[in-house]
Length: 238
Image (cartoon, rainbow, N blue to C red):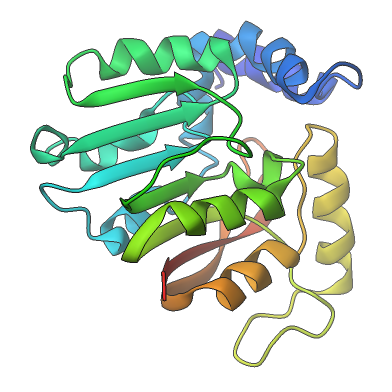
């Protein structure tokens, strides 16, 4: 049985993302009522994050940057390594989620939590950039990919895990989703301000040398039998 917190989250998801205001205002209005229990519900939905972190091969002495870090939950996947990092930077645009991130990051002196738009955030010489189910929520996602690539040190890695659907004729070796999948999931997620298509994976593969790519399916809480396509990608700056 779902908890009260999970039922509240479901209610906010069914209501959908606000239709008016700036991107930052829409995020804050959507996530503020559910920020305190955001992680618990999404543990059941956001698959592949731990596997992606493993593929990023995060090591001591590196500068690790997460764009769209939300509550900072993904840092827990490499928490044992964080004290030995040169720096961990968590960037997000939503104050309500960042409040949770700051509470989580308080135990790591080398972790900075920054409120900023990933489209405009600037850093250099970053060893690892992580984006977990955030690229599909960014209106200017192409600019974010370009900026992320530019911030990487030569040989640095960019890791992305996200929802998507394939094109009608995907590139050789990639999965092809049926017509119903390609229509239904973009319609479903658009209600909550999430964009699903094949373009983000195509751009990542074009801009970076592929180190790791896995296409899979994630279950949807309380909707038995339904699976939404997702991908994990790690690419190296040329």
